Image 1 (cartoon, rainbow, N blue to C red):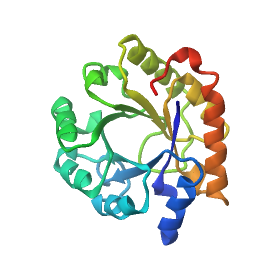
Image 2 (image 1 turned 30 degrees about the vertical axis):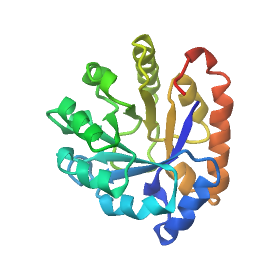
Image 3 (image 1 turned 45 degrees about the vertical axis):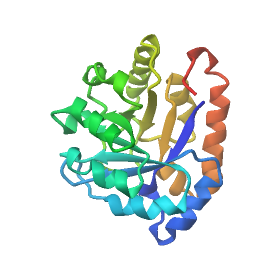
Length: 230
């Protein structure tokens, strides 16, 4: 069963409650929160204050993606603010195993993200410890970028690695997802699809969210042989 995670990065912040309510009413499963520090990626976005603001507005899973250096310094703050999942980049820490334990000890589910050019070897030994593997399908830092086609093979490889090991780790894909490729990415093995500009950048974000979710539901029927985790 797949999930759709609209990214708040592309939302209209003049009507944040309305934007969140709109996607929640139209079958969104997660709310993706891209945290950027201007150091790990060339942009600056949000801090724990946004998670704290969003938490009372929705029952959606708050999926916090830390694109920051020294993420270990901020796990507690994001957990306390109301994050459900905290995902960190393997490239941003020297002690990934310890950081995963820190996230779990904070009460959140733990995710690890890889940039497009980072190989799956970087997570091979920690896959049994994480709940989510986030594969970037653009170079992180900005919304509205084009999907990098070679990541599709990486998704397929990650799917095989997880399934052959009998793990329950979910695969999330973030970057350049839209109506024209969401089914293909799902069929490659992704469980959760992040969509920012493809949802909030459209004239009717609610209707677009529903359309993307329906495309995922349709693709699910063609993925039964993958034995994806529920």
